[in-house]
Image 1: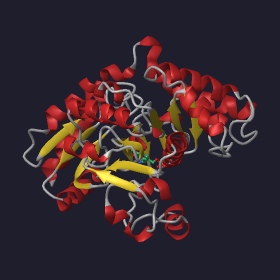
Image 2: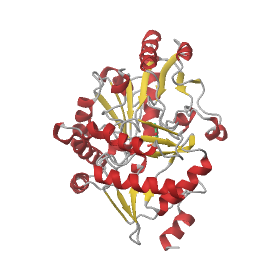
Image 3: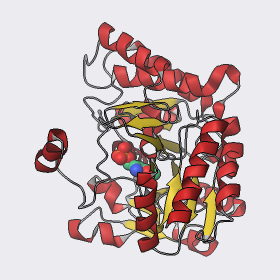
Length: 397
Ligand code: PMP
């Protein structure tokens, strides 16, 4: 065992008894390399973070340029820092109409907390409605919205006044009432294994929120930045939320989160009480510079890389759905969930994939399923290579 591996298990706090445990010396594009030179194809993208691949030269350059100019100067929102301002402007230009004010945070969880607080402050109400089988983060507020009891029972009491309804169930929309401050959902349920609702559901959800005066919050932490074939998954639902939550790919590989709302709504954070949400490192200038550089790579001079996401995703779907070990395949853009017979089958496949130089992961609530979400920059040749290795791994099980 290498010294670093030994120290990893001794001094770095573990989140499970079975960490992936690959030792990475270097990563570039879709590849990760161990100190011994073994190469892995990354089919997770750090959980939909590295949409432009690892250490993209444009992002590396933006990071080093900004780090040399200045790093942290002051807590969030006090100084005019060009990387933040310019990134907020670019993001606003890509959001649904009206969502033009960006609050930068450190992480997705913190952005969720901010969105919940803003909804409470704006409506003067306390109830939050979330969806069963949703995941919104691990801080106390976000954990309270986790649509799966097994991960949260040990941390009670959590936030009061949270009601979980069934995702996609139109009858449950009546449970959204004039007591509800906001409804929060990931409009494509990622950790449930990529589950979509019908377009009439999203329309009725929007209508119900408007009727009762509840804010609609879309958590697009995993789905944004082209992963599902459009800048936001919201575009595919044809619904405009009141608040959008972003993180993961937002920082281009650096830590960054954000919630985005109309200026008039966000202004509620400035009074009664002022400083409605305070963060020291939120919107760190180096993270903002990295995120903006990554987004510019994705925008690709007017021909966004995500226009290819669906076609690329379909290459995996077509190749895998015929395999006898595969039970079902769901996808959105270059985000594919592959169901196997059981969790035990998944673990056996994971071993074969590891040997064959592929990295994947299951979904939090769907343990018989694995994800395929490589960087959006993956070429057709690299897709063909990874499909060959996937099929070989399935055959070897
Ligand atoms: N929302 C969703 C949909 C997520 O997938 C995650 C992270 N997996 C979060 C929120 C929380 O983000 P973070 O881990 O950056 O706090």
